Length: 409
Image 1 (tube, rainbow, N blue to C red):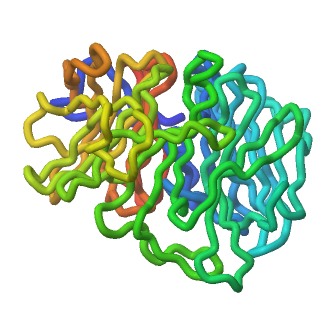
Image 2 (tube, rainbow, N blue to C red):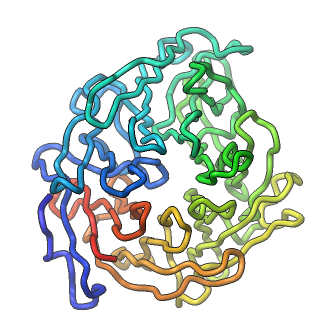
């Protein structure tokens, strides 16, 4: 990894260091989208990827690789995949394996393989191949979602996909849950509004809560017969739900859909707690806020008006908040976020989380300006190591997208 003290400025928090983790000049390197579980629990190793954007990778790109970044060994990078179509990488909670998919699907056909490999690159095996309709359905998954999520016990992994055959209007998208030990798959959610599902397993170690998945429902979206999304949302926008990984116990998060507040499309669990945090835009005042919430029983797609929904404005102490992408440490006591009013260069701040449901964020510390163009493919997407001592971000400040680390928080 390459020291980058030039990215710090006179206002940066004291004692921090910045490093560039990927340095190829002809091929971009980037972090996985900050929802993904890509760290070993000791915060010493993480997965990044080569030849990708901040949001996705091309399943037909021969240059794409998932790479292990060993922070104990100077940020050394070693390839974990070399096959076409690798996507949805997750590190198991014990830090021993990377579980991922190989997407060789086509609309209405092809094959989807669930694989794993040890983090030293050995022991690669195929756990399950889906090359026929999902059990109990006529659906063949395709257009596999770029993100996957793994349960806190490491037994299940979930991802999304398109369920259409290429000929049927209004074909659904769905959420698939794979049992890693039993090598089985079940389609647990389906519908036209699940095109951008952002599945995130609860990090809780509680045996019941560990089955919960946070999901995003894009109401008013449009797509074609082949699953291409032409409009992400309409009307009052998306809302966020929690569902058990067998498709039961569907709940609401109390955010958005009141004509003023709307979900921006990024949310995360607050560490291992059963609270979650979303980014909301508001028309009056014109802000981008950070709101934490606790799920309540489904009562229609009413968002903020959900009866019994608990919520707390985390950003209320920050003047003119404009926060977009964020993440917490595994303890749920520290948060990192990008921010900055429109027309102003985005910056990265870290802050402390207090009592869930009550306290605002405190002790905001400015870290740096990543100097990114912040176009869609080059979003900063900051996140924290599990222990909260390091922050990570993307930037194309060098002219090509690269992955970076801030140490010494």
